[in-house]
Length: 263
Ligand SMILES: Nc1ncnc2c1ncn2[C@@H]1O[C@H](COP(=O)(O)OP(=O)(O)OP(=O)(O)O)[C@@H](O)[C@H]1O
Ligand SMILES: [Mg+2]
Image 1 (cartoon, rainbow, N blue to C red):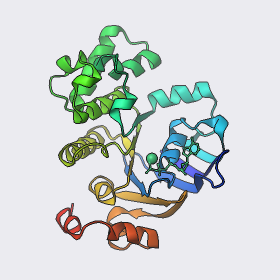
Image 2 (cartoon, protein in one colour):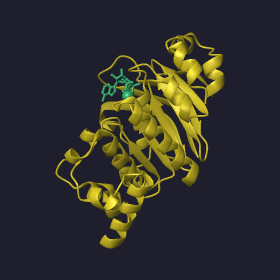
Image 3 (cartoon, rainbow, N blue to C red):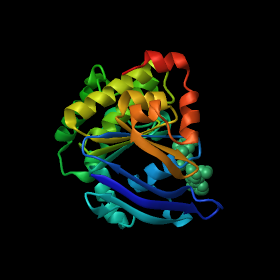
């Protein structure tokens, strides 16, 4: 469904390309993992797909095809339409992506206000449905709360609800669990698995942590300094890493985790 061909992104104020010739594809209904060290270009890749590249501050070439349509060079109006409806985005820090003065429910349904002609009641019904799908207990009560009244885990669920309320086909998740403690992190991973299984939504899941990716993604891509250095079935990459960087990444995972977390 999504294919990235030879993506290059260079920010004007940098000497080195942030992304150097990345090619990737995501199949229908697949969760693809993307791992790599800090600054390796994972978020810039996600931003390129999401239409969030600051276009005036960088040069970019290549193609990002969603069902054959090029997103990278689409005009603003076209992008806005596509991104609202077809692609949902969830970032690491729920608190900073939420408006502190807006009720959770209103934020969850905001994308419906922008992209559909649904009535207020219909929007509310869909928001409550999405909030139930992400297993927020008592959606009706949460609907009327403000971000500061929710825990980190609940906020991240609300963010996911906001990203899926319009039923996009692709969900971009940029380190969505990094800020959460381990138990909550595991719950969010289970939730993502369930959403993928039940609705067939495709996902790009970005993480520093190969071990987390392993729990969620059948296939993984590894980036280092803007370059895709390895790609394959997660278990194969995990047990037989080919590139020296991937070998270091795997070696850095404590042996205890490697044994215990066999999927
Ligand atoms: N707006 C920008 N202007 C200039 N350089 C940028 C900008 N955004 C990102 N970069 C640079 O692009 C490179 C890739 O950054 P990116 O955020 O994609 O890394 P990352 O893999 O997501 O890292 P992390 O794991 O820390 O989130 C880095 O060198 C970063 O400093
Ligand atoms: Mg990042």
